[in-house]
Length: 86
Image (cartoon, rainbow, N blue to C red; front, side, top):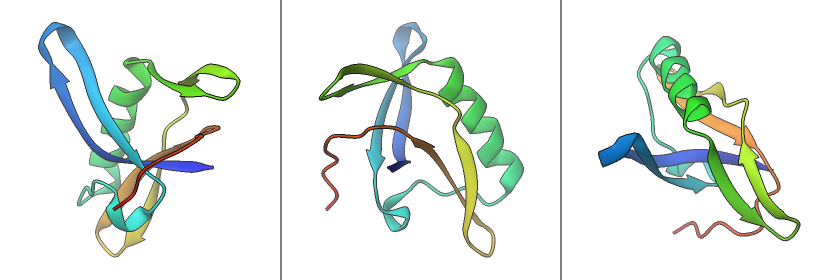
């Protein structure tokens, strides 16, 4: 299942706070593919771990897709057990 980065924030101590969405419409947006790819590098370096029915899973290999002209979103595929989208 794709999980789109909906929001993120770097915290003290170089930790990353993040939220995923299964809906591209709720994803964070970058104006260029390059900006989105640079942020994918950040997400990959921060070792984002989600809890799944099988135990912890490290989200990796973040990718970019074009949601609309000049709108790029970042996602990874992982065994998301539940994402609350509003």
